[in-house]
Image 1 (cartoon, helix red, strand yellow):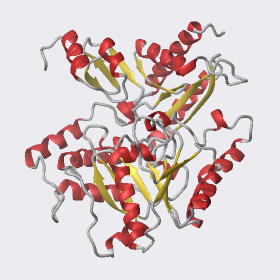
Image 2: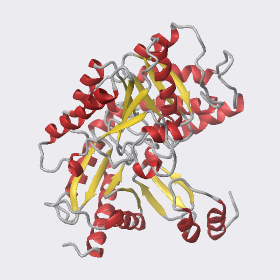
Image 3: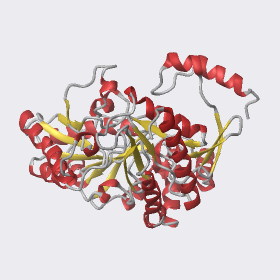
Image 4: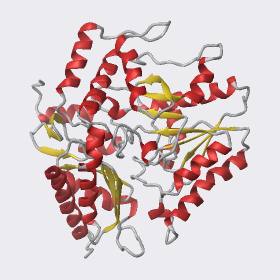
Length: 454
C-alpha cells in the first residue's frame, strides 16, 4: 500500500493525471476523491469514508467488488501465461474457452466473437466487419452507418462518430460516413403525444434516412437497447419492432450496442432479448469481466460470420491485446459465477422489481418529473414544474447539485442532463436498495430546498 497521505495523492493527481470527461482547469484547482478499497457494493475513499456504489463502478461491476473467484482466476493465469497474442494463427486457452462460453450465453445465431479491449474498440471493429461483409457480397457502396442523436458508442474517433453526443462532436473531426436520427426519448421530446405513436414516428426516421441516403449506400444501424450514458432512455414498446422491420426489409445490418445492457442489466442476458429484436452484431464489454479486467468484443451473427469465413482474404484488423489471457480468465470466472448462481434469472425475479418499485415511490417528490427504468437501471428526471416539464436550472446545474448531495450522503450516482441515473450491482439486497432510495430522497430534498421548490 502507498505511504502517501491523502493530500499527497490528491496533489499528484491534480498535477499529473488528466481524467476522462473532465474540465482540466477546474480539476487542477479543486481535485477529487481518492478511492482506496471496495467491498461488496461499497467503495471507500482514502479517508475510509463509505459510499454505496449506485453505478456499479461505471455500469460494469454487476457482481459487486467481493468476487475472489475472479481474482484467483486472473492470478493463476498471470502465473501460467501472462500474455501472448492471437495473431499469426495463434491462440491461448482462456481465449478459446471464453469464445465458447460467450456463444453459450448469447442469443441463438451468434457463434463467433472478435475480442477487443473495450466497447469503443468493439464498435470500431463493427465498422470494419460491416464494410468487409458488404465488400465480400460485392456491394462496395454500402458504407454509410446510421446512429442516433444522444447515443453513446465510445470515445475513439470512430466510436464517438457513431455516437450522437453533440458536445463531443464539437471537439474533433469525426468520420463523414455516419449519419444520425432522433432518439426515442418520449419524456423530453414526445410532449403530450401517445407514447407508442411517438415510438413509431421516431423509428420511421430510420426509413426516411435510408431513402434519403439510398439503400444501396447504407450498411448498418447502430443503437443501444436502452441509451445508458444518454440518460437511461427507455424506448416505447412500439420502437424496436418497427426498427427490426425496417432493417429486415431494407438490407441493413442491425448492431445492438450492449456494453451497458449486456449480462443481465435489463433482466435478460442481453437487452435485445428484453426488447425482442434480432441484431446481426452485438457489442459487449464492461460487465463481461465484472470490471475486474479490460475486455470487450463483438458477437458476430451467423449471417455475417458465414460470409466472412467462407471467402478468401485476410481481415485487416486486430489489436495487440485481443483475447488477452488474463482478461479472458476474468471473463470465464465471471460467466461461471453468473451461471452457477443464476444471477440473471434471480435478479430479474427479485431485486430488480424491488428497485423499480422503490424508486417509483419518488414520483410524488415535487422536483421529480418522471421515474423510468428496466431491470437494474433507472433514471429520475428532475423538473421545476411537473406539468410543463420546465427544467430547474440552466446547464443541468440542479442535477449536478443533486448528484453532489447524494455523494455527500454516501451514495455514488450519476447526473446525465437533468436526470439522476443509477445502476446498482445485481447482488444488492433489499435493505441496500432501501439505503439507496433513502439517500437519493435526501439529495432530492436538498435540491428542492436549494432551488426553493415546494
